[in-house]
Amino acid sequence: HTTAQERFQYRIAELQTAIHDRMIVYEQALWGGVGLFNTSDQTVNREKFRRYVETLQINQKWPGIQGVGFSVPVTPEEREAHIKAIRAEGFSDFTIKPEGNREEYSSIIYLEPFDWRNKRAFGYDMWSNEMRRAAMTRARDQGIASTSGIITLVQETDEDVQKGFLT
Image (cartoon, rainbow, N blue to C red; front, side):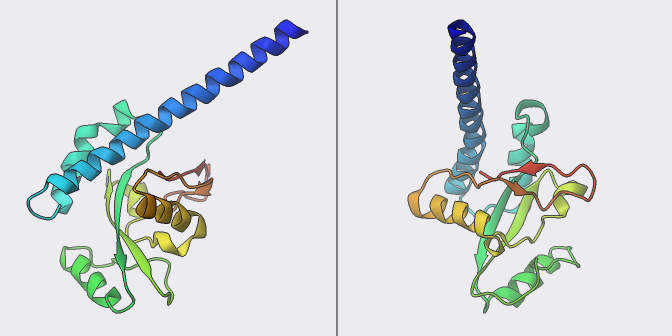
């Protein structure tokens, strides 16, 4: 009995370590993005962000990452101008989602790879969801990577829905 219990406890510790190590690996992709923004002489544009994420080769080297995104804060006063600016880049249907009036918004403006699934989250207001907002607030206020609780990603469809989290 003790040997089985010890093996079980050892396996739990192994899994905890593996999950912790994977989270650190995911965090490194985000810190690389911080480096991209901090070292750019000009603002990071859509093409620079796409090349950064493409270089990460997330489909081959970062299993489990659906995409790497960047969102910006948007005040109610800036909302219409923000939407017009993104539409002027060639995204005629762009809007901040979900619709509705709020005291503050965020807007995902870059999300790579920009495939059909990730396009579903383009323009999503991360502040509109309490779980996402809490993670973003911790990250902003503490200067650390912060993970949300379990959520359903905006990219999910009606079939084979998976739970996920944001870092």
